[in-house]
Length: 126
Image (spheres, rainbow, N blue to C red):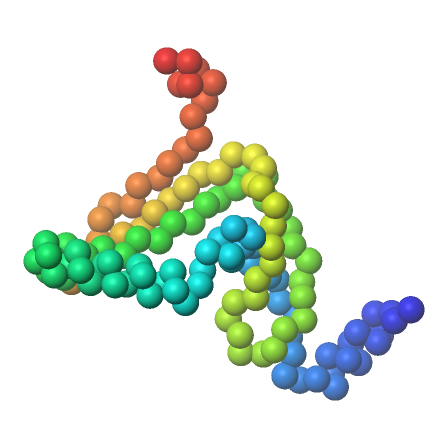
């Protein structure tokens, strides 16, 4: 069985590799991200922009981050150096997640960031 010394020696011999933490991606999301789906999205986006005469002030890019109350640690993996993203498939999420969102227009305008907290039991009964 290879030990820790073998792993260190392997990494020294292969300087193009580094130890990284993979980012979680669900199987459904990975399967839906295809060249055809992306092309259809941008075709529809272009059509809507032209039809509605949308300017850069009306086009926003939003990115969200989910901060889980129960953090999950992933083991690190060996990957080629220079790759900014290394993925891993995960199962369904567990625990509550607080979501924050950042929105910026193509003209450089920012919206105040909304933050979504999970509903409490009292709120769900109302």
